Amino acid sequence: MKSIYYNSWLTGYKKPFGAVPIDETVTFTIVCEGMVVESVFLIVQKDFGSTFEVKMHTMSSNHYQESFQLSEEQGLYYYYFKVIYQEEHQLKTIYYGNNQRSRGGEGQTYEEKKELKPYQLTSYLYEDRSPKWYREGVAYHIFVDRFYNGNKDGNVINPKKNSFLYASQEDLPMYIKDKDGEIIRWEFYGGNLKGIIQKLPYLKELGITILYLSPLFEARSNHKYDTGDFMKIDPMFGDEETFKKLIKEAECNGMHIILDGVFNHSGADSRYFNKFGTYSDKGAYQSMESPYSNWYTFENFPESYQSWWGVKDLPKLNTEHPDVRSFIYEDENSVIRNWTKIGLGGWRLDVADELSDDVLKGIRQALEETAQDAVLIGEVWEDASNKIAYDKRRHYIEGDRLHGAMNYPFRDIILGLLQHTLTPKAAAEKWMSLKENYPVEAFKSNFNNIGTHDTKRILTALNQNKAKLKQAMTLLFTLPGVPCLYYGDEVGVEGKEDPDNRRMYPWGKEELGIQTVVKELIAMRNKTTSLKSGEFFPFSQGHLMGIIRLISKKEFVIVLLNTSDERITLETSAISECYGLDIKEFLKENELDRLLIEPEGIILLKKELEQELSAISM
Image: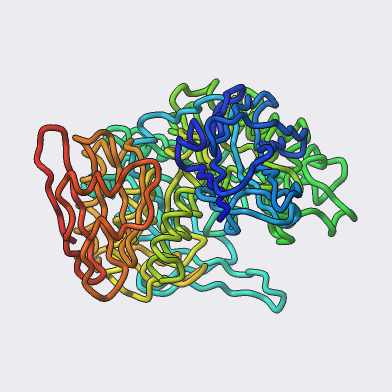
């Protein structure tokens, strides 16, 4: 019986593992048994470039090996194997490539080349390490208008025209729209920068070290993604002096601030576009002679113009134009440089897909020239290693652009696992695929989330199942990457999609049981080296999900989640997946066979150097 085997996750078949720097040499080994092999070829294609076909050397009667240098600069390579063999005195060809799910690891044979799925191999410029404070931190995402009003009288400062205020914090968010679906009345709760300053003690007690704030610049909306003036803090939130005070007070409490940067578009009601005549400046909408006329692209002036996803309230900035680039990041007093130099920890770039690689590189350069220890992350919803946007392969995480991306793929895996649309084995495979595709430092620097202002609240997504919520939180704080908690998720805030997911934080009415669990998880991550920088190995056994975060055999954390409603006994002989670590032997060495996990239960096992292995059940 003929058999071909290759596994991209095991260094016995591909060395080194995963993504590699440019000019690195990678060694491939494939096993062909039960067949009379004439020759074996390694086929490598540079993404949208040259194809190389190399004959592999015979290492033994059934092992074939070849080394290949990635000399075609950064980017993606795709590879597969071609086996020519004899059968019934005829030469035949069979192919071996990635599995049908394109997840990496063990592949499969293909009779027809046209059906073949190649393996991905990422090549990057250099080890692009993010700042330590970010990489080892715990973030908290604040939607500023919905967090806390710091005014003593509770009044909203500088309320806007054509808006309404809520009578109480418990009122549910809503929009008032016209017949065309356009929002004509924005609603506000009154959260502001003073409120964040006053709640810093709470955030410190929670264990937060990074504050990720929704946009702060002047804008008509409550969310501020429709920027009106990039150089001015929205008066409803406060002013520049208050923002500087927040930065200073946060620093005193051991926290850095990441600001949301919205540079793909502005608001129609902005100083630069000025559709409604709000500003004294002559905007691009008002005149072709405006100093901002080249900042936008008009198909038919003035009513037809490019906008973000067709939303006319968000006219798209022409970020390829030199004037726009100068304003955003190149000039000494550009937006990036101006705000970074007052003490920002870094930026999260909104809709990074919409910004070219050149723009991302320019922003990164400006950031590094302004602050030595700042971070740059981007909003990318898919696997950031192979994303194609606007018919172009993107190079977000290959060096000198983003340190990391928002990790929506991890969120999808967590929800799929807990909603039972993914088996633990499938979840482990998906995690391994991302680990393989991302450069090591980018993988460590991904911004992990289980909820944002663009998604359902995690408790709502899990149908109010608090046991599953605890499991989701456990994964958030134990998986590789930087965990980011969406405000209120730690106290059981619910909500469907926008605007319901943007409810006011329920001060005085928190779900303290959930909060206690989250505090414990954050404290564990903050003081456990394995969870901040340990190697990552997922495994599975039926409905049991397992994760190992490993520094050494003497320092590690093991996470066990029972995703079923029945008791499960951990049996090492039944573990189905081992990725680059002999997990069965590792668990046996620590006498973990026959461990019992309760329905929808969690067990965390922790060992630190000379300490004994300890277990926590949640």
